[in-house]
Length: 416
Image (cartoon, rainbow, N blue to C red; front, side, top):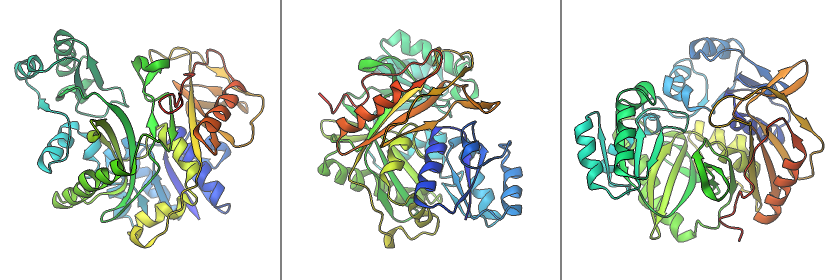
């Protein structure tokens, strides 16, 4: 079976590893891939969806898996479906749940799904009036895709107003910020909930928790994610019943009514406040670094993906391992502020029940080089969360590149 995976990060690498683990007779292709995916399959040096659709047709690709949201925003699913190439992911219209925060917030409001009070506007004076009614901290978001960086949590009214000015003027995030969403700040704890959907039905994956801040104790600037773990004991059965009933089922029904049936990964970024789940954001693909800890827990990820593509989730049994996974991101010296010099990655030993998912890496003269912000993720698997974390950090000690930085407290919320 020939599978094309779209993206270049640790998420796509993790999907490939999991597929290889469950099925040995797969031929994998990556677009564009990274320096490490070359060891798992064939890298295609283009991100042009039209070129890729022709390539997939000529190569008799059996399945395309979309990892990166940028491809979804371009409409790769629509294009591949037009060419009768099976593809895992939502259409361009359905992907608006992630690609437009304004669309997302208005969708939540329309279908009475709990979220923070908000204003979506291009008008600075309206924004200022709304900001002044809120109690700080205040959340200011760019409407479009910003690679996980388009959210400012302002500590004062003035800071929120300045952030809004910078977005609306195009100074902060270009066109992505010329429509802003301003929200009240919800106080609670965050969870990442993933449902693999086929338009009508869904299966819930283990609940993960991401660590967005750069430094220990959730301090420092926001990043794309410095680590994750799954499953989280913070997600009770009672809470998950609420999530299914009050969020996932209304979301799938609402998207059908909007004429944009949702298939693929529905990723809910939730804030749990007073035991009630509120939607902070939707993503429409696997999260990164959550994907790196979810993939090892799914017995047969290919069967799950095919069940979504073939609209047969209701009739498919998906087995989840009774294990825990912790992933620790090793980032470059200057992340997330600026790029860092390239450095060779040296790995002493890979202990049992651990593996590395590579992200910002290149291959030069058969040497793997740290060549991006988030370079790799050290993943540990265990019978409980502490064992998984200990294994992940043991692997971290065995990996080295110049300027390596990582958080020392991943999963601290559930390990006291």
